[in-house]
Image 1 (cartoon, one colour):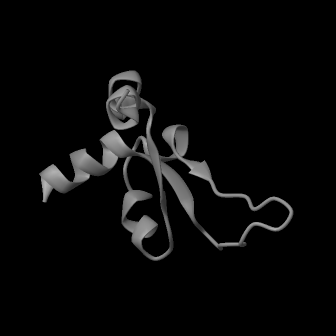
Image 2: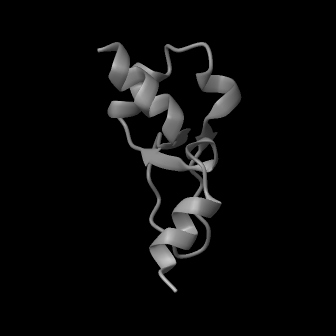
Length: 68
């Protein structure tokens, strides 16, 4: 079986998030949906600590891109 096909058919854009680092996330913070839909990145144990990075829904990135 093709794993890429299984992944793409089982996952919708509504379920995917991407990590957006500072200063790029700063512009997204101005949108009404930011506080309710984005998640602050928190490092655990030996993960890299990144200041002011957020997980942002991929669908919102597409919307912002389409607005420009």
